[in-house]
Length: 82
Image (cartoon, rainbow, N blue to C red; front, top):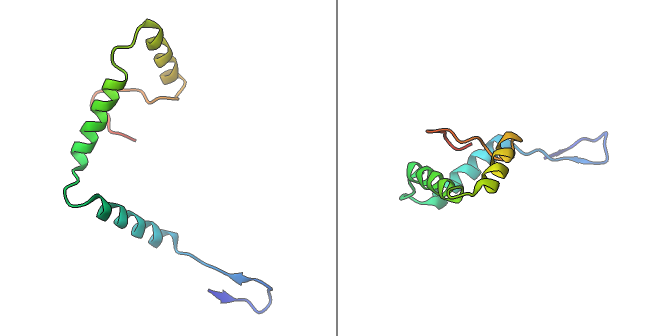
């Protein structure tokens, strides 16, 4: 932080790249050593499949319209989460 003598304000600078790296490191540390990202992704896919299973015809039509409109992601086999 430094003050420009020609100005009446203080310049405050933050290195966002370093802060983002620090934030990500804190998130991974908080997840702990037993966190399995592949298992988490599989569980997320299973939850999504369960959420949209058993839809009746009207619900399926609404779901398809939401996918077409880009509100919900298009489901493809083996698709990784965004």
